[in-house]
Image 1: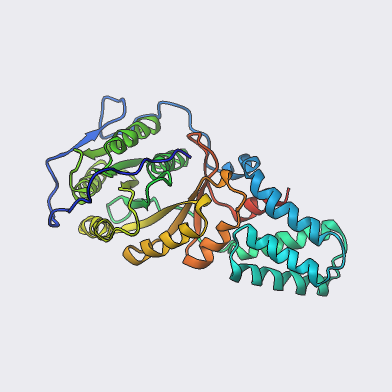
Image 2: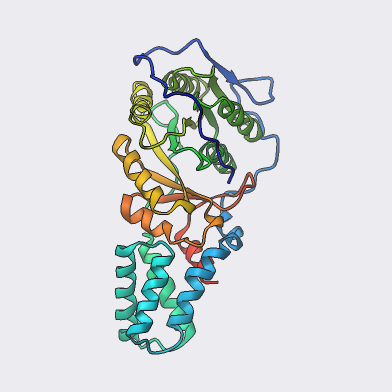
Amino acid sequence: MLDEPVAAGPQATAPPEADTASPDTEVVAPPTGDTVAPAAPTEEIAPAEGRLERLRGRLGRSRSTLGQGLLGLLGAGDLDEDSWEEVEDTLLLADLGSATTQQVVAKLRERIASRGVRTPDQARELLREVLVEELGPQMERSVRALSHDGRPAVVLVAGVNGTGKTTTTGKLARVLVADGFVVLLGAADTFRAAAAEQLATWGERAGAETVRGREGADPASVAFDAVKRGTESGVDAVLLDTAGRLHTKTGLMDELGKVKRVVERQAEVDEVLLVLDATTGQNGLTQARVFGEVVDVTGVVLTKLDGTAKGGIVFQVQRELGVPVKLVGLGEGPDDLAPFEPEAFVDALLR
């Protein structure tokens, strides 16, 4: 995924919260004569269904570390204590975390003994079963993007600089458009000059309007105007790209809470998607916990999963945060954001 540069300049102080729309925002319409009716995307968008299956070759580094390493150990026959320590080490090195690792090892030991697993094929099937269980296949992973009560669904996209947040917002628009949704983008990252332009470009490619403000405008006002425009236009969902915040900056985190409060004066925020860089490991989890204290995170987007050998971070994120991973980034292409499917993910690791 494309990185976002760290926003320059001093921390901005947002003006008092207001109920009215700002005169400093504008609607950037895709190329069409009617700015309310959705335009056709300017390029072909790959179907959202089955993307993870199509992109599974991108998980090569995680597969060699996690899947192949475990299968080599489990398929070798009876395991002694040294072998079980190797299994545990393999899981820990793949970033599953200690709690998940202990649970996976306990299940494997019990089931290998009770089922008399002896062959590599049996070991593969058992490992698949346990890993899928740990990913919680029953968790709701669809992005809530259907309009309701006469208003669009509102999806707030948050995260720190460098995770690919603005790019992810644009790619999410493409995922939803591919599934037949009509979306509008809100460029509420007003601290980074290129962010609004970048998002508007993604909007044009997906056939979606973008509401943006001048550089340094109040992000809450831009978000408010985007939801207002989305309501007037009758779109299914409004995607709000917020400024990439350093989770240690209290003022900016408070402002994120303000964006959510102002938006909720006219529409419920249906989703808060937290974008995390899969290559950052424990640091990403620290960020996630702090964001969770400011806004109720409903789902996680893991970017750059193709660039890490530690695919186990998916397991740890879910266990630590108690919310599902809903989307994963597996490359820099416009359609390399895939809805997360536990079974397809595990199959990719074990192929």
